Image 1 (cartoon, one colour):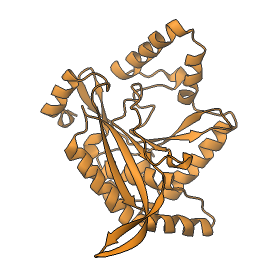
Image 2 (cartoon, one colour; image 1 turned 30 degrees about the vertical axis):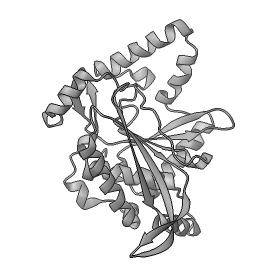
Image 3 (cartoon, one colour; image 1 turned 180 degrees about the horizontal axis):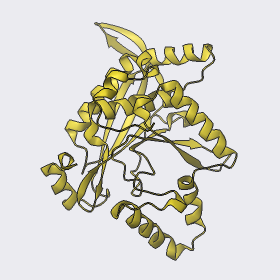
Length: 279
């Protein structure tokens, strides 16, 4: 997909290293008053949806329909566009067992209710000891002696990302970690956070939910109380610049303004979408 290889991206891939010195950050406060009401209504009807599920659906559709050029990664100095759009969502394990990750395939083509159900199901399975092969690999690295741990990691990354090969026995490929990451730190009481980009994941963006709070804002010249969600994004500057972040922000705001649409399959938008969906 040569349309992904703009002059800036080709240059950036040469001058930046993986993304040690190419990280950029952005913050965005979103009025989620209507989204909170939607969540409450769904719960009263017996369907449990959280703000993380809403944001996963919002970001998926914003990337797919507003800024599809974000759905790519760097391989040997070239930008490689992904054919599909999958979202990665970290979920907490039992007690102090850390986190595992859930991959939502074709997230842009899914309803938020479907996304919520799959995240809950996969999280429940992981807490019961059933994880995907890719998720289990963090334990594989723990069993390798420290001097060899990073060389093994770099070898696996070279095989999957740089060479574009799949290691089926480990469930690893250049697409194992999805197109972007959505992570919630607000549930831990943190207002905002600047997170890292995982070098093995090769995702161009990690979007973090902060703590939701009621705040006074100005609407039509009057001060009113609204429910505000702070979002923080960490981006790979070799792929994403101000223009892409701006389009992403506009897509996020628009999707939050019509939150009920997130519980409908976006049939019209999918007809013109460049990303394939699985049958």
